[in-house]
Length: 639
Image (tube, rainbow, N blue to C red; front, side, top):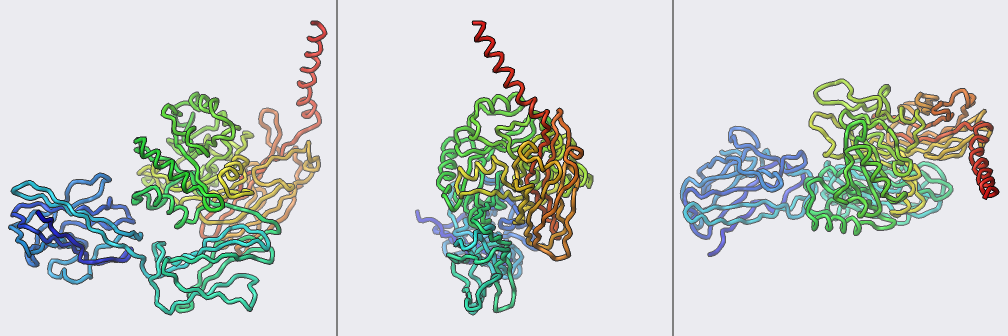
């Protein structure tokens, strides 16, 4: 028996395009009256997916059937698919003979459905062979046929140009730049007039060099072996000569010596995670579309099949490529609020994290896990520490494993209760939600020492009643671009956090960089003066640059409106002993940088600690060792 012919009346469409879309069924043998025809759209109703139509033909964005070009057949919603995708069903009002046609119309009008003008919106991301499924259940025989229809979703009209480049480079060191031509939804596209030319320029570019780029058919082009001859801040400018539109890259800092900075996620999912058909698509979205350098992949909660987990592990290993993209194995655990809270674990090996018996319900479970783990093998990141149901009081924070804390994610900031730039809120209330025991500053005031990172989008911790901010980014200074080096840099707290904008910052106290500890025992001059230096380069004007000392603002640097770059140098001449915090008879101070742009994007440097060590403190530290040696000597004599 020959199968019926099903097809789409449109071969391709543009991402985000609005129109009228028709599918046709031409039977190879008569379809009897009462035969059910079901269309499965492969969409769960996410904002970026193919728009779900409605069944009321009197309204816009309707779906209906057309029997042999004349009779309108109403649609009704069908059962949900495996991935909670929407389907619609039609019942044939009479027999559909061979040579006749049944059409499914989406987004058209019942009195005018022949044109492509309509009100249904295509998905906002490109896809090769977007699949629809048509199922036919014969009324008399019960025979079931199903056919797949593939439609190409192409990039829409060129809207913006984005530059993917290193944020930090060394003077005279060569690097590559990727220029992406994108539509309004961020998809690569070549949909531009044939005579479109893009001119490229940047600071200190020699007059005899002229860069002219065509819009490449792939939607991107790689420019190899660029380099800067002068130390400073650069921004690559791309001008569309056809319409005069100018696009500017994120800042690039050129240093006298080679300096490497990498951007990534320790926790989070891509914006279109539900559309990912394979793990490779999932990883490519992070690497190619978002332009990240490193990533931690946490298996979904529903992923329990051993074969699927092995496939995911293999994909993580395959995408880990030195000098291109670094991947880590992740696991997420949550326990009792305040006592345990939530932890994101990541490692260079999957064997430590995917054991079935790992549970962090109580603090004793955490201690048990840390006893079996090796230092340098796993890093645990507390996150949402000020959340109502995810809070953590920082009791017994592990120095060996908990090197960084998530200060910000798409649900808000856990920096502090007062003066919080992004308070954790609920949609039903404008009041800030949070707790003081989970405050990062309160933990720092208790002489707990950790760096700052930021989280991305994670639906597993996103409650329906919680409002959302932009997903954050973590930046890591690392001497090499590989898994081991970036892992070690994070364990050394050589990192900072942003709300998603690639804000560059550097912060130093008496030459010590972010995450480091210095003391008056090594540098006695710190008692009288701490020399603070640093730099900031933003993507928008700098609204405020604050130096936080011991939980309060020490100094707010002047930033004229529109200024995007700032280098600073100042001295903290307050007597160190008088301003130091005292916790368990230990005197210490900490400093960190907080930046806010005029567009309200922000960044936080990891803290730098200055310990006040008096001669008596140093003597007390040495005394037990001396006493132990004397005791040992006496025991030997007595024997």
